[in-house]
Amino acid sequence: MLTNLVKVTEDLLSVAIVLGLLLAFAKTSFPKSGRKIVIIGVLAGLAASIVMAVLNNTTNWMDTKTWNLRMLIIWIAAFVVFAVLSSKIKKEGKTIGKTVAWIAFAALTGAVIGNAFPAVWGYPYSFTTADVSVLSTEFLYKLIGYLFGLVLTFLTGLSVYQAGRRIKKPELNLCFWIMLIVEVIRRGTGLVQVLQAKRLIKSNHLVFTITKFANNQKELFIYIMIILAIVVFVLLMIASFKQNEPYRNPAEHRKIKAKWRSARRWAVTVLITAVLGLLVITAVKAYDSREVELSPVEETTIENGNVYVTFEQVEDGHLHRFAYETEDGTQIRFIVIKKPNSSSYGIGLDACDICGETGYYEKDGQVVCKLCDVVMNISTIGFKGGCNPIVIDYSIENGQIVVPIDGLTEYEDIFKR
Image (cartoon, rainbow, N blue to C red; front, side, top):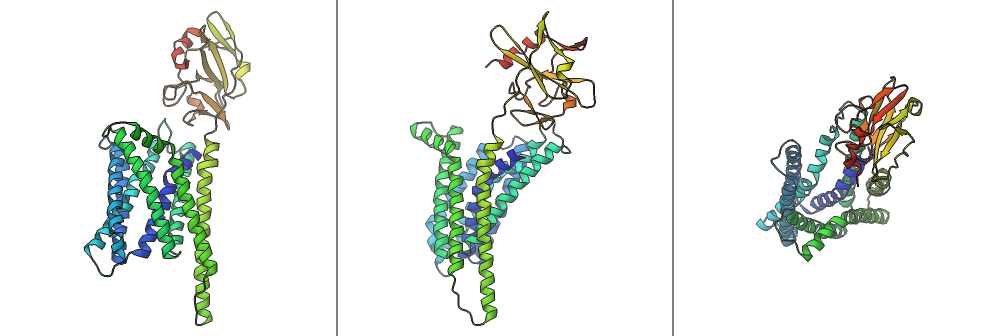
């Protein structure tokens, strides 16, 4: 659950703040006809992102790098056109330059959505991998984390929009252009990264430096956007307490007070959602990605070419880890767990065909893959499929589980590092 919450928040938090400021600017700067064009851009971006998500997860018609390249080119081209023609927005009357500026702004907004959302829409496709049923508790937890991330980022974007359109226009314009400059740097370095990955430009020291910056500073851009959202909060709070609008009667006075109370609520919502988002991508991420320590290898008897595990060692229903060490020091691990409501045992390598020898651990009575966090159905351990432990030969003799050493050493390469 936490993994998907973190992934969605990392992918969409800064995007939500960007969209909030974009739409607040459109609300205060464009007439109704201009705002309609922006709405069309938003809807086009959403539709394109959904189509791309479906194609990316069900066909081979479009690869992610090519799609991102197109979205980045559209965004940068739209930014250049809008930056050149933005001064015409203030002029009276309907002119070609003003209309082109509106269209460029709509394309810029749509490209933000088209670039960020396909990956997020595609997350539910991955929930059913590794034999995870849509009716399982694991699927439900993943879906809850995913939906929490969407709700948090949506509320962040909505509150930034509502707060942004209530601050003074010069202050909104300043925040808007700072945001665009930061986005130009982020998307410009991202464009170079994609071009280099697709070998459309040759790698050199400059390209290497730019792509390294793009890879290493992803969190920096999120933090900058969070700071910008907090700036909007501060500006609106200051404006709400300094308001001195004239009124002619008590009714008008109450109406003005109600308006600024609403403004303060939106400002506080900006702060709360921004801080929650920051906590998710820092504290929650650190907690979720903490290193899981595997339980120690337990002692066994090794003789006559076999490893012997007594029933008494594994009778408690918990996960137990055993190993055989080869002459060159390679430790070949295997696990044993008594199946619930059964006298049989789940036995297999402490490794799988998908995730390698990262191993399994027990959490809340469940067996979990350390690498991908997939929860095993204990009843299926000992059978092939998905992220289940690799099946090994064993037999039951005189109250002991007997594992042939020859059956373990054939998997020696998996445990070599």
